[in-house]
Amino acid sequence: MSHFDGLVEITQDGAGVIEAGSSKAKGFFTADVMTCIVCVYVCERATIMIHDSGQLKISEIVKFIDSYGAVKKLVVVSGENASPEAHEDRVNTIMSKFGLTGEHLEAKFVPLPAFAVLSDLNGDVVATGKPIPSGVSRIPDSHKRWCVCNVNNFFSAPNSESLTLDIQYQQGKYAPAAELNQSLEELLGIVDEQPDYFFLNITFLHEAHKSGLLSLPTSLIDLAKKFNLERLIKNPLSDEEKTVQLKEYESYMREATA
Image (spheres, rainbow, N blue to C red):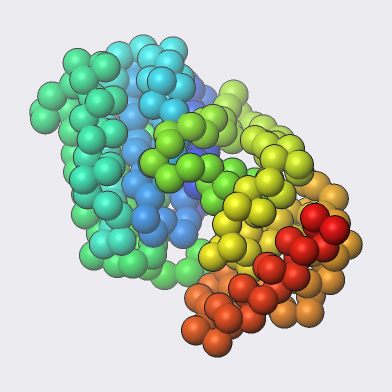
């Protein structure tokens, strides 16, 4: 498989399922794979792809996969930025739940920092580091889904494995974008506790605000615009910017407690 025709897209911490006998889709693809792994489960009654950050609840993955019958084949794709230890433990746990052995597993390593994974219904996968071609049919509400994923991940405790599996494609159609796991009050409470991530926290919340997922306080909207925080999505803070961040955080907290 080397092209995207007939494939449906899923995104990070999402799952897609194509039921056996369905003629609406030929397989899946998922882009921007970096620290995550991509798992393809070929089951008795469906083929399933999951783009797993390592934060998803294993119990939900197992329950969902199990509803489609015995797993005949599991393909696990990882890249050079994935954590082998963390993901290996998760995969082993899932395999043990289904009684799978090494004979069922096909592990594929991709020597790239970021890539896309394509899979047909037999679990034959291809990875590519090339950009997704223009004209390819993409998942609806992609930026909104991106915002939900980033806020839910970034505002969860590291290695908590607490995120709900987002079933994005099922029974021949896409599901609506998921919702945020926490209220605005809870999210702002986390902002208060993380001075070292103040700018990046506000960056993700501002993106969620622009997508209509929450209503950010005006002061934080103004701050995001003043410092052009959107650039932090791809560019880390410099030492000088970290100093500015601390001053802005302290000012924010003084106003919040005044």
